[in-house]
Image (cartoon, rainbow, N blue to C red; front, side, top):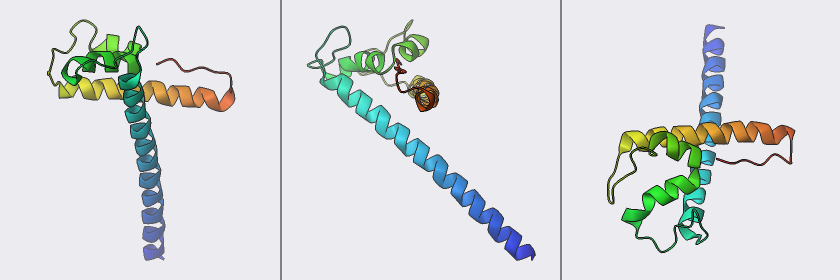
Length: 116
């Protein structure tokens, strides 16, 4: 009986991990697609097409989420070629939070528009 309980707990934990991975993978696809779109559009104020990559990270991040950009980069934007892993992680957590909130709103109202 004890081994049966352990097996049930193990199965439940593996289902939870699979669900978390699915949500993470879905967000990563969303985030990369949003970056790609921002990189490819040429419409002001967020069009980043034609800007060399080292100079376009601020533009792309602002396009992905103006709110999160202002929270994490607004007062101190990235310099050309600069990498800041901590702010990048914080920025993605912010975008993920907005994305999760937006998805919860969309379930109840098809007319809800998400602005990140």
